[in-house]
Length: 268
Figure 1 (cartoon, rainbow, N blue to C red):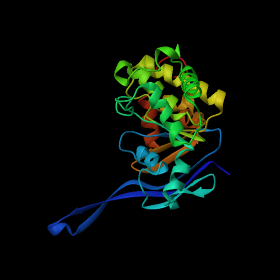
Figure 2: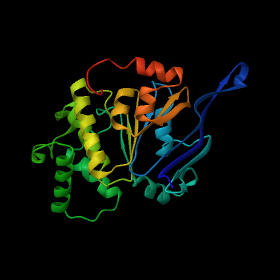
Figure 3: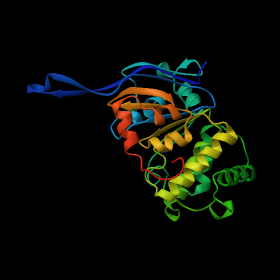
């Protein structure tokens, strides 16, 4: 049984137009999308801005409600969860890293508080000394060393790459069953992207993390992912192993994405 099983997922937004706004049209942000993610797999969802990939992430996180379809997590359809406690228990099993490291961290919290917050949400019973140990261990895991140097810093005192590492550390604090990484490198410069990609690859290998990696960058997806689904205008147009998708693309849109990859030496 796959860890994540997305079935015939739709998210249509209603638009009203015409006299008295009586005419109804729809924006089909996600339209009949289906895919599975196996435990321990890194699955890439690749498409340009506006393709629907971030909407899929928001639906899986239950930040939005689908128009129709099912999202099975560990065999449970999470689209049917309505009780607040059931949703909380589900979300504790997920970790998320978002695109903008400047908006995703509370500027009023220092790193210690940012990384302690998931422990509170998850009901982790730990004294101050144990929490401090856990926070510093998490910082070491994302290569923010020495951790003592970063523990009590505020987001404005960190670089963009350091903020994104803190975001990753926060996402992993509760050892989630699924990490959703939505364009985690796109706002970083080239050297920092390479560092973060290497870090996530190490996490994948050491922790055997299950990751849904959302990106516009086909080369990065090829490097990190086991399988890739290419999404265009809300629909999956091609799915397969990362090497097959990259080396032998079938759909014109996938071919266009590959053509946009810079031709440099090495695998990337």
